[in-house]
Image (cartoon, rainbow, N blue to C red; front, side, top):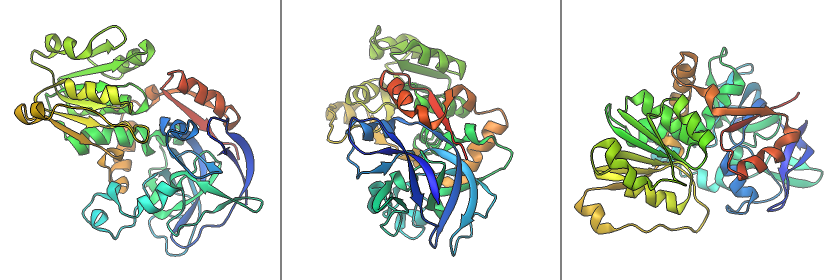
Length: 369
């Protein structure tokens, strides 16, 4: 079938809107009518060349839609089901999957991370040319074939444009709080970076019952948005030394939990430096390839500080995604506040330009059919 997609062909160049051919789903795969897709900073990493990727490539990994058809052997979804797309299509068989840590599935590095399906091939072509599918998702298109475990069924009364965020920003942010850090009620929390992921971390900290949620950004509009969804304090790191500003707020040397949600070496080091003794810093943001950080290992051991990573919020998509959707539908999760604007796919390059300038709230593509 012919589809409309935004195609990445060369580093630093605008995406091109093209008509591609999408093959029918094979065994264990699902054809999804993609209704909405969020624009994430991870896509910008590829466009800027900070992450290597095969080309040509249909980007996009945060979306929601309706199942059209399913391949042989698919049992978890049926035609007509509403689904949130997951960029972590797991195998169900490896040690990590069997222990409930699907976000660490061994198969993902060889398949989705290489922008191919689980059999190592792609379903997209442009004439005789193969086109790759970013993270086996390719949600910058109005139709997508994805592995069965990348299509997570949700309730049908949830608005697909809003819950499209669940597949990346929300899962990554709230999951980091609830699954990776397991933040206890009454904790003090610092969130560095108030884009879609950082705002989701703030929402997760509020839901967890944190006593203080301190938001850090260099953009005042992002900080205003953080206040709207529950941040108790905001700090503009252009004007304030964040680490020095924390003791008067928390009443101790720092915070119990610090989440870095940007993906920069200096902000990771800031988050670690903001910890009180016994605190934990969680790296949620994804850095450019080849970057390193510097920390003092004596302070780590002497003050029992922890630095850990969180991939996809340590989520179990079929269990966690429907819960996140329920939180939104019950008025507990302010997804609407994470969205800056909605656009047509023809405006996608303008949206990436805005992101590169620091406008980090989510832009949602509404696909036409």
